Length: 149
Image (cartoon, rainbow, N blue to C red):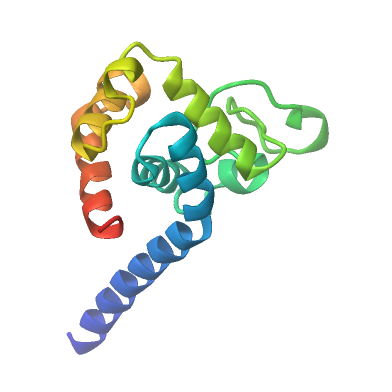
């Protein structure tokens, strides 16, 4: 029982540590883009973290795609990894592309400049970004409340 408890605690610590590490690493980029696009940087970070598995998913590490953006990649010729997700030259390009995608959506004009994380998460999820909009937006909101105090 004591070993199980220690394993659970270490997994929680690693998870929190991983979140903090990701947020610290990409916060300057998200802040810059948040200012430019008038989207809360916390939303950008939370979506990037969730969609990329904290930057550790294969799509994030091989394609530099932290947002699950679908598109072309040229991996078929270079790798055995097959994916429907877009390749980005850098993680910065992925972050920029996500912000441009958000700015192209109809809800953007009504939320632009709004700091309400809940409204942003619900709008993004409910307009087709997530398969399970309620679950996705609730996770983003919980993560934001924990990481973006």
